[in-house]
Length: 337
Length: 272
Image (tube, rainbow over all chains, first blue to last red; front, side, top):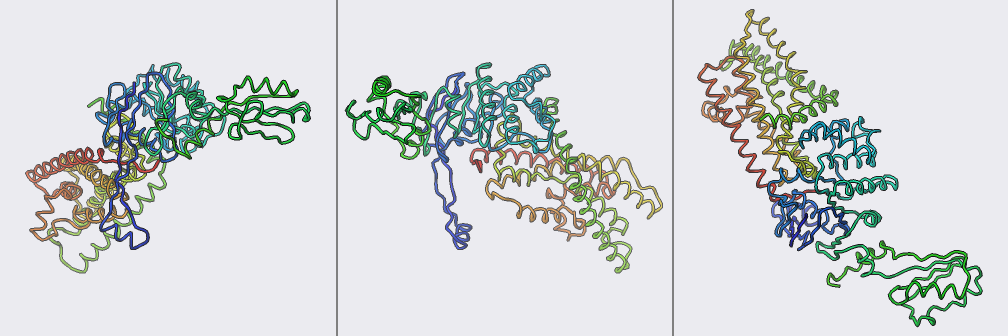
């Protein structure tokens, strides 16, 4: 459905020296600097997939989205979506896609929300019957009824975002681009929006590309993630793959029935581990053991623990994707790793 | 053509609703303009009384009064906010939201503004036009209203608006380079106001300069429609002037297309 090959975007930026003198100088003799926002990115998204597009601020996510939606023209490289090249014949191309930029709105700010939909209906040439059916469906998944007659400027952020998503879906697009659709929203609305995205994806096989900083979005929605940093792709694969590649850390937490027997636990000697492999914390109530499931299996860990002590409660936590991504953002990764 | 109308009609409707939405702002805006018009009137009144002459460069005082009010009316109906609207969208990056829709960028603006213009016309046009005609009748004692001149004036006024719109959109694209247009917009409005005959009739200019100004697109904005309304032009001059207006309209539509295509390739969307 979506093919991206060696996509690259450079911006010219005027460099200003500090202070008044610098401003005057750059007014008469601007100095330009070329900035590469997106550097040689390639990926492929099959039809019906929800792809998470993540990366730290300024990584170039939005620039890629803008190129894929036909707003920006790439400096070099190719992208093709549903057989069309976005920046050529833009008018024709955008009929096939829906776009939501979480930080902007496509709704008419001063008009009742309903007016926006009637304008969109004409723009996309949706016939009356289809429009009615569509609105009923969108109403069901996004619950627009409560505020459809209010002017857009009076909507809360959560309402506005739902309305925006509905606006991008009115013409049943084949591909949906969501740039931070859950930015600034509370947990309930986030959940509502995630549910809607899932429902639409399941119902119509809509391919979805989603950028977000909320990793819950990613874990809940995405079949696959592409991670970029400083304009380059650093990871491409399923979430499980990310976890297994970058972190096998598990956390065993339990409340021992009595602490005397629990103190006999010596994981290091039992499994022949060094300090790097294991971290035991005891706060006098809960004991937490962080370990790597590559070196010691979860099963062995559990059976050893239970053979030594009785427990009131026990659980094994999954690797925390947030931790993994934080590490990657901080340290940067070797793409070939 | 019908398809275009169907797609963009909602924009006109929305523009109308928008103008209605902020009617207080709108009325103040118009009121301020009308005040300026009266100041102009008293200025010319003083010129004629102190000079003692019956006519000034071929204009009697009555002609001048009608000129002031009709050029004001023409200015306000053919006014286009295109430059600032386009410039703002480019500046804050919301132009991106227009580009993700299967619409022609300038058409969306045009039809939206047509809605706003309709609202203006409804509020200002009829009362002011009636006022001018009553003044003419009171001053000269003859009913000077000529339906043919009026209809040709309406045609010329429409052309004038379209030229103004496309000119302003072309100008608005300079936001791709200048980033912010407020200051240069003021300068532009001032210069255009002078060159279009909105301040003084172009007939008052020295012959050589007047000839050049008559050919420039700015004359098409105010001077030509007003002269037609005043009945100062004979039939060949009217046809020639309308032809000139059509030429400038085509010129700016073409120019707009070229600039847009060039800009889109080099665009960088600001913010977010």
